[in-house]
Image (cartoon, rainbow, N blue to C red):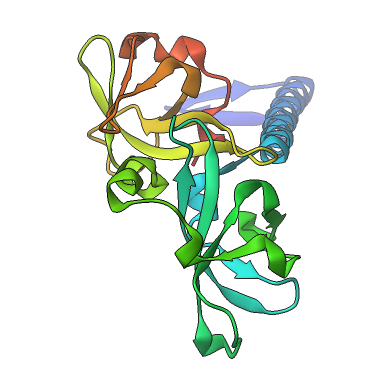
Length: 234
């Protein structure tokens, strides 16, 4: 086989062309398998994380059912006084769905049943009507709620020991006992999208009486403490 390049006729043996083609094919196959292995590992890691914990953002706004019919939506999560555990789930009933006889209320996290739905959504199911409590039974003042509502924590800043501050994007919650395991924040505070999410273990976080968050860790040391791939947090 001959090729012409700038007026010069060049001859290449067919065997060389075959070797080059085979090499390119092997390289492409390797890249495809490498990418597939990476995707499979990401899926396995996501499933493993999902079995252990849930995200506060997935719970809030999620649907509430009695196992048969939709009742409404999760309104908020209430933390324990020390801010370490989700104690209650608040929900608002939706009478437009035709479910009557129910009112806004709350349920203890340890009585809540969270069911995974398609596309990663969560559904709060109240299997026993006695587990649901009327809103009047919640012994929590407005002042206490300001420091214990998860919706008020998300969007606030955590201050690092080097005086850097980053906005809290989410919380990771142990799905069995409601304990907060990590806070999630955006590493790049100038980013428009959440593309550089990081976690900080809750035992490294201090919460003051006003609900302010701080840590003795420097922001520069965060990457060394990561337990989860950033893509799993988005």
